[in-house]
Structure formats: C-alpha cells, structure tokens
Picture 1 (cartoon, helix red, strand yellow):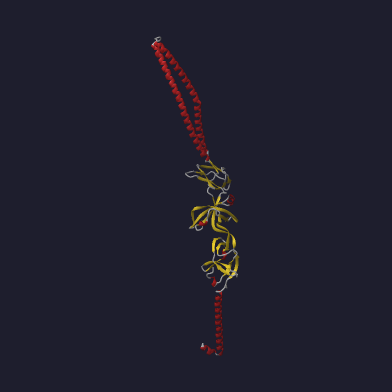
Picture 2 (tube, rainbow, N blue to C red):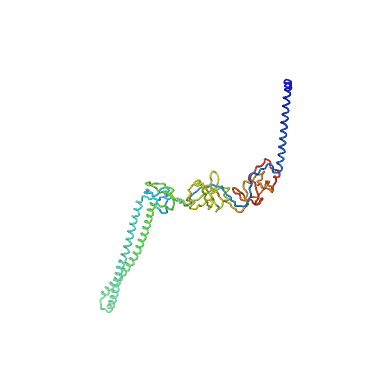
Length: 434
C-alpha cells in the first residue's frame, strides 16, 4: 500500500481517503440496522406486535355431525340373485329369454329335450292303470264269489240240518227194531258228510274273505308304489322345463340352444335371474374406525354414474368377519337399500360414503380453522375486550368436518380468529395464557 501511495502521489492519497470514508459509512449503516432489529425484537416481545388478524368468526350454537368417509360397493342381497340350473342330462331345446329380459316368477325361460322322461311317464302310467284295473276286478268279483259261497254254505247247512233230523228219526226206530241197523249206519254216514260239507264251505267263505282283504291290500300298496314312481317320473319330466324362481332380470346365460348339458354331482347352471330391487351397499370401514359405527347409523353416498344425486340408507348389519385388502383390515357395514334406490343402481358400482356416527344439536361450535398450535399447545385465538387476539385453551367434544364442539373454555357469542398471520417469535404474554 505504501509503495502504491508513493507511486501515485497526491491523486492516490485522495482516492485512498475516499475509499476509507465509504467503508466507515457502510459500517455505520450496518450498526444502525442491527440496532433496529434488536429494537424490533424487543417490541415483538410486548403487546401483539407482528400478529395480523385476517378473518374472524363469532361462535354460536348449532347442529354437529361426526362423519366417517369410506368406500363401498353395491352388491345384491343374499337371495336376490338366483342361478337356475338343469338337473337332467340332455339337449337344450329352446331358450325363451335373452340377456337383460325381464321375467316373472314361474315364467318358462327354457326347455330341454323331454322324450325320454315323457316315455318313462307313459310306461308308469300304464303300469298304474293295470294295477287299478286288477283292483277293480277284484272288487267286482268278490261280492259274486262271496254270494256263491254263502249260497253253498246255506245249502250245506240245510242238508246238515236235514241229515240230523233224519238220523234222529231212524235212530228212534232202530231202538224199537223197526228198521235195520244198516239203515241207521247209512243215515249216520249221511249226517257226518253233511256236517263236514258245512264246515268245508264255512272255511271256504273265511278263506275268500281273507284272500280278498290281503289281495286288495297288496294291490293298494302296489298302486301307491306305482303312483309314487309316476310322481317321481313327472318331477324328472318337470326338470326339462326351466322356470324363473323369482321376479327379476336375466343377468346371465351360460348355454345356448342345441347344446348338450351334462348334469353330474352338481346342478349345471344355465340362467341367472337378478331381483334389481334387492340390492345392498357394503361399506368397507377401516379397523380403527369400526368401533364408532353402530347399527342404525345414517349413511349418505354417491356413485359415479349419478354425480349430482345423493342416496341414503342406514346400517343394518356389521359383518363380524374381517376382509383384508392390500394388507389393510376392513369390516363390512351392510346398508339395506329401498327398492326405488336399488332400481337406480347396479351391482358392483363403487360408492363414496359418508357415515354419520355421531350427531348433536344445540351445542357450542367453533370452526376447525380457528384452532392453532402455539408451541406444544392447541389453542383458539379469541378476541379480548380490546379486540386483541389471545390464546385460549378449550375442552372439546364431538369433532365434525368444519366445526368442533366446545365443552368448556369459551362462551356463546365470543369471536375467534380463523385466519391470521403469526410472527416468528410469539408475544411473551402468550406463554402460559389460558
């Protein structure tokens, strides 16, 4: 530096002096700025300097809901979708419906080749007819046979009585030796023969009665067996005609006309019918929230097909079994839908659900936006009598989406700050403020 001054002379000295003065001025400005920062910090430590209130709201009493958000799926109720099947092996002869057709309970929707089953029914009908004719013949001939048997028995009784009288007369004459002994022996033989003939005809009559009773019972049993076999055959014949089990819409067809269906140990599914008025909403609730859900809770939901329409229902059942999706445990809350709502929806639709798990009326409400964190404390900034914001610790209850229930710490009509700009350093009097 010295050599530079010596070389430049007076001009160099003047330049050096100007440079030194500028540095002194800059140093003074820096000192002044530092002093201003210190003063500003001290000012922030007193009053609400640096706190800028942007928006406020007066708290009041009102209605509050606790709402859980979840995803649901529209599903048919148990028994709302029925799959009709074929229980016999055969060829599908005619399909009377197509996918999407509306059907009623008992309506014929398909038929199969029924020749084999019809022939079996005709054969059993013929056998049953033969048995009935045999029974009818028995019932027609029995009275005639019984009449003939009774007539023969009456004749035998008369002959036996005549033989008894004749023998008694001859026996009395034989005692007086008016007739020969041979005559008496002859009448004794006649009497014995008449008695035996009478006994034989009585046995024949009893045998006829017993035979009729047993034969009629056998035929009646055979007729019952044949009727049961015919009923079974007719039932198998009915399997060839497929009818709709419920009112609904055809939701699935698995075979077409002319295809051969083989019925094995399981019924071969053919046509599915869905009752579109019996749908339910299955809401998948996270395991951490399921404890808040109760039967009867109101549910509001929307589907993508109707973005401007809101549907409603109530929780009818909380399924006890969990369902794990993407390693997250869910529980299903079932919401029964009324028929009008169900008809507007379709199975497998995704629903965005709001479950109202808590509801109170006439409670003191503070907007959620008014809650702030000051250090480790969650407080509300309420305006004091001078209109200055002061932190207030409150005791809260039910928490909604936009407001929170205030149980203690604020009064109805007080004003709280909802939007505010806070300084980096909070006012000293806020520390420990209640």
